[in-house]
Image (cartoon, rainbow, N blue to C red; front, side):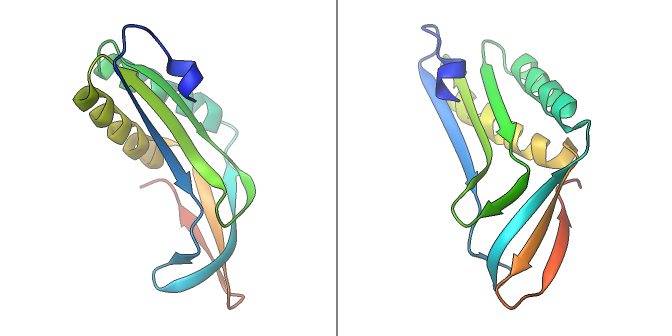
Length: 123
């Protein structure tokens, strides 16, 4: 992600690595699986363009994995480069929030007690 946003005009690069954790809501998580709507790639690209336009002179790279993941795997990764750090941090925060709100990806969590639940990344 960093190499995708490297630019000599930018003095700040902020990254985010959303990793699969071993718990959620007080319950142990064994593993999870993300399912993506066929439009997910198009929507995530739209979001990246919108964030770049909202924060002038900002470069954006973002990806969300789907399929089976285990504890410690990266699920959502992004990098944002900007001339100054505050802009890079703000744009990265906005990027992550907007991806989680708009990209049609759903999480199926399997807990360590064998129970499971679907969590919508939308809304």
